[in-house]
Amino acid sequence: QKEVEQNSGPLSVPEGAIASLNCTYSDRVSQSFFWYRQYSGKSPELIMSIYSNGDKEDGRFTAQLNKASQYVSLLIRDSQPSDSATYLCAVTNSGGSNYKLTFGKGTLLTVNP
Amino acid sequence: EAGVAQSPRYKIIEKRQSVAFWCNPISGHATLYWYQQILGQGPKLLIQFQNNGVVDDSQLPKDRFSAERLKGVDSTLKIQPAKLEDSAVYLCASSLEGFGYTFGSGTRLTVV
Image (cartoon, rainbow over all chains, first blue to last red; front, side, top):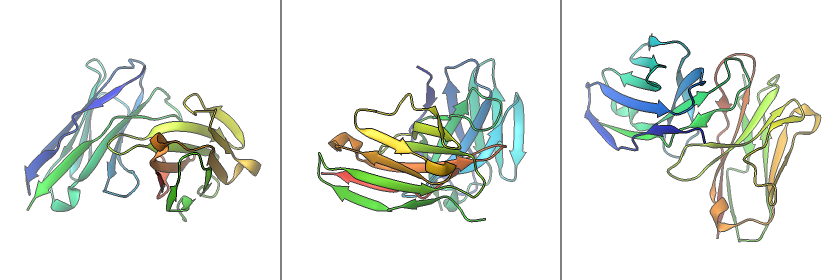
């Protein structure tokens, strides 16, 4: 059974702080990794994708991947109250398009003004 | 670009009744997915279509769930008969060559 594990939280950080979200996965052949943000009552929205070891930065978001440790993380710098949401980690063992995603349960992030 | 359209947004039915959900993917997206998201959990893939063919339905409870994608465009997911544990949000997504899905707004099903 391929699994994706996340701390369910809630993770609470003050406005302006760095929020660190973590995810581990069990399938060693996983190739592609994604972070989705899901506001309450809304559908998931893709915010980051990462495919190779190391860091990938996009604005205030940085995704980090360590395939040897089967670990992927998301850092949110200068956290804003609007970042309050559930963050879902998803992985796939396909390197191409049209792939099946396995999701974690998500981490609830609350950013306090 | 129009997004993934789903209907209805909400549905309440009694157990043992049947229900159907509809999805229209983004124009030109060959791959369509149905996911089930139970409260407090991540989405779980039910079925994946490539055009009008099934790629993966390994987690679809086939004794009560069925799905079709006629003409390789829109899709219908049906549950018959519904059980209490089917209460969830049913998310449709589509993808094109590239990365990441686009999810629809989902259908929230409550079985009472």
